[in-house]
Length: 383
Image (cartoon, rainbow, N blue to C red; front, top):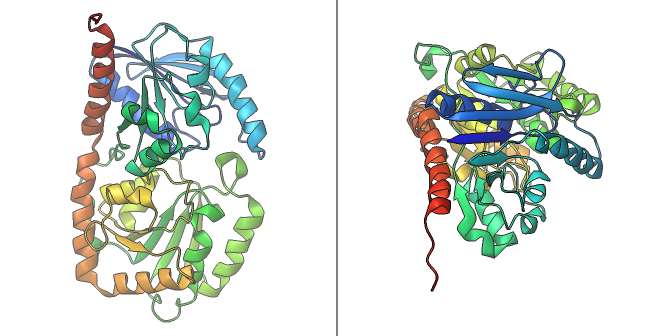
């Protein structure tokens, strides 16, 4: 089977500038190729990456893209420019996976392959333009429900296939919770929608008492071209963190996978306090933490429900409460106070993450691709 994967205009592949979607499809493409499929991956060109090359069995084609703009309207225009450039490189394929806004519309009358739309975010009205796509694939049931609510007649075209948990580059198993330092970890973009202000307030207010033996490590970019909120927001967080007297550490972005694994494997508790009601579509960072045997605590967004159960595979706090910082602080306090529960939940999360292994998720995608190809090849009879 020949599969072409077209990723977005703003981040390159390999994912040297981050990006959950880029990270996921980079490893999936390699897994498809490893199984003997022909795979072409189109992504943003940046200096240092060749415009055309073959790596790990995947043919990479790169076209000029853009840094993430501030204006949503301008972003959509740049996406159109990029999509037209990417479209010029498309050859006939069985499946064309796309993660751009415009390409499913541009390809709606094309015979170049089955258009497979990766719906990586909550829809914002565009689903009504994707009626001719062969498949709308969402990473969570929460996003699938949102698509159906927007265009009910597309329900039969939806497939929920989650992201794979990142494969470890370290051969040994992750250490047990009791063998780790007393570190609370956050990994993600430094942006208000990630709820970092809640986390810092919750931690800093009790640093001298409840969390006196703990450190909070924040890993992620604040730069706007990486999706962060910029220097003013980072400066605000750092001022709030001063109350913790050096126990809150801003690590900055860590894109190297080995270095990032070390961060996950050093922490006992991973906290992802996102308040982005329509911004989080899955939660790859919490799943990655679980895959490294780290206990996880998340906000009660619907997208986390597919793999996190309160007190079983993770912990959940109510970010919609009247005082979410206090709700988070109380949850952290109760979680860290019970070491037995913390260790048990970390182990259960670790086992749960195995269901999201790369081979398992690749099976789901390839089975879905094959179903589309088989149905199109099936003979039809007139009635």
